[in-house]
Length: 226
Image (cartoon, rainbow, N blue to C red; front, side, top):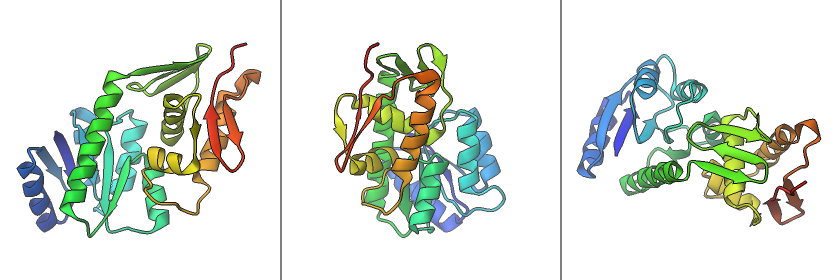
């Protein structure tokens, strides 16, 4: 895979480039958020790996800018900022995964491969339709009854996950892992707050709510035909 690596610690950068190239990946590097934005916005990559704490435009801001530009390349934060709030901030900014320093190189390689598989799957299943709701997973566009519905990055991911599991029960833990890449339970209302905002956007003009809440169990996505 072709990887863009944003890291200003030259020793770590050189070490990980060697590891990634040994694993048959092609790596391009940069040390500033400004350069990362330019490169990721003008070239095709399979995965982005960003440190959060770099000079100038930091990694968090760079991801936000890239997502606002429509760049949806899978992104992993590799950072020493390890608090729960830091993870939430990173994932809400548009990152797909978050790995704290220090880390095992085997885990980094495994996560890169997982992100690459996710991107490939998205390319082969670009459009999803459930009832009158349609999403284009490559263009990150949503329509209901033909009318466009603007969604933020994590709202789109949440809708995408629900539509991929339409008619099935999905638990809070499943959503935390599948949408926010949390592989552990966290005390946060991130699922509930995003679900509320997504519902409000999907139910404009009196449209029926496609998201059913199953108390103490989870949610089910199902668009009833009129």
